[in-house]
Length: 404
Image (tube, rainbow, N blue to C red):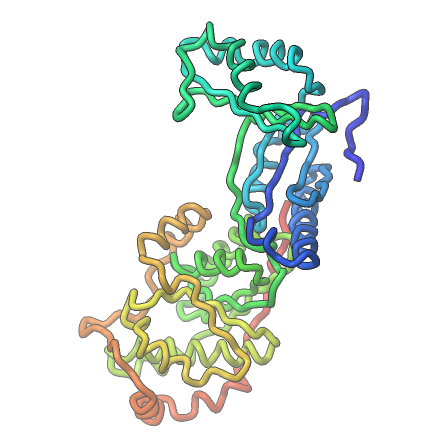
């Protein structure tokens, strides 16, 4: 694939990206497919952001040339790369059209002689193909150009790190300006479709992000128990999450009004309410899963974090799980602090913290042990006909729109 630059307007910068290492361990057909998906997603995301950039797929990397006029939009370009699943890391580099050692020395002095003054530094060089030039000897020679101006060489913790990649076949040297981590993982949508049980709290967006990083294509389900206020806040949060991490792949938000659930909950002794709500939430989700043909449910539960997340309660709540439906709990082994830190990193924490606490708390506390016998007793006494109504339950399906 040809870059869109010309001899009259050579590219000033290049982005060199790396795929998640797990992708490179796949069989050749799967690896090529996953790498193609990563590049395809990047191209789509650049396009909807009005960035006329081409992504070139290589065996162990991908590259994007940045014409001079694109430098002004570098922040947006980096944001897209940081939020595209399958990108392990990427490097922003300045292109120098020569591998001649003396010319590199001149350019090195020109670019770094001011920055290096009274600071420690180190020079790191990679050469392709390997074995033609001894990189350590070249590092010493290039470092010698700047050494008299500096505070000295520090190979472990330099104040200024200068990185060069020499491509001897193309006769090009790349001066690495920045290394940035991506989200890694598998390309989004490379696996099955999943339905995220989304409350809008801190946990469910993090669970959604981890599920997306495993290649699942996400839709969202809200059992709206608090009316318009909850719906407005949750829609805002989901749309923000979608815009940053999932677009332009189409996703849907399924909304079921929880009026009947709230009426049932009011009649139940307080210490059983959280348990029954979770059970009914799962019954709704099973119905929706089968109705829409979505085989995976993603939950933000973390084992033993709260009373409704003990092994006993979770096992009982999911006891009516249909055959062929998988419940995926990506937060199960994480602590609350780890979940909060991840929410902050992926940008969902501030919106999650705006939502009021909608969970059903009781002064008496909630049960931490449950079984089918207890569930049957509560169902018989308090909601004997509710589960019979499941085929008649209504829900709305809202498309999440791609925004520029």
